[in-house]
Image (cartoon, rainbow, N blue to C red; front, side):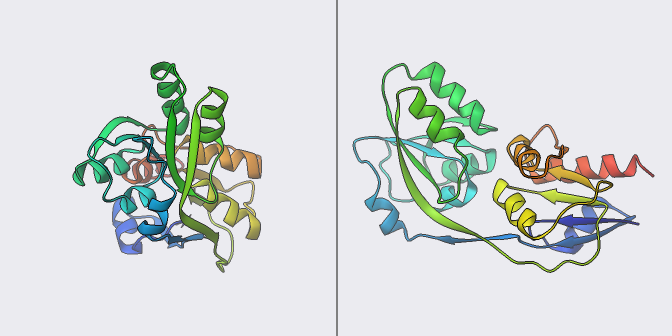
Length: 224
């Protein structure tokens, strides 16, 4: 029976059902987040701009009371769904940050101000790339991310990561044996695995949990 560690907490019974027989699962949050009050976030918004960049579900869930003229540039279909349900216009949704940067590069030729809602721990891809293109990025810390100490025993056959922060939290506490398979929700997290561990992570074509679980199931069952 293969043992899998998910570094984000999900109901274990749901994971077992999705994966099917032959897997033993553990699931723990290796990071925790604390959201800022919207009133505090709102104070830092550059009101001269109606352009907002959102690259996480946590940021998307916090947004409220913005003008109907606001234009959202999003990473992730879940964030798009949340914002559209709240009545906001999503001008563009990309699967990855680098794809969003490419869209902005091709569609904004003049200097533009973007309000970017993010964690105090974030990748440089969006802000640094846009600044290099001559745009102004107003970074707003919408939530704080901290690492959690998690006790795990023994090695696992597979390790599953959902964010660069989760990767970094894990690496501060544990290593992965050479025989351990590494899976990631998407390319950004896979890049973080390679940067911090020097290992290649496998990831599905689409960065969502259903695709990831089916990808893991298929890959691991192929070993049997």
